[in-house]
Length: 98
Image (cartoon, rainbow, N blue to C red):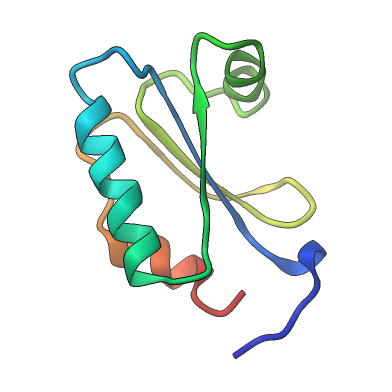
């Protein structure tokens, strides 16, 4: 297991609309990721919030929900846009050794 500092940890962020048809599935997905990879946190951003809209613009995200995995320097490691959501193991392969 890698014992890196906070600067070496990949970040997983889900950008979506809480009041949408896909919100329940997004919450279930987040729960599965966090259960399968204890100690890992999936960050959420409401698309209609200032920070959510800014993040979507910064990474040129056009379809939602969007799952963004970023490196410590902010560059994109992986981006999934729209449905279907990726497999939990696809996220896990990027974050498991942080």
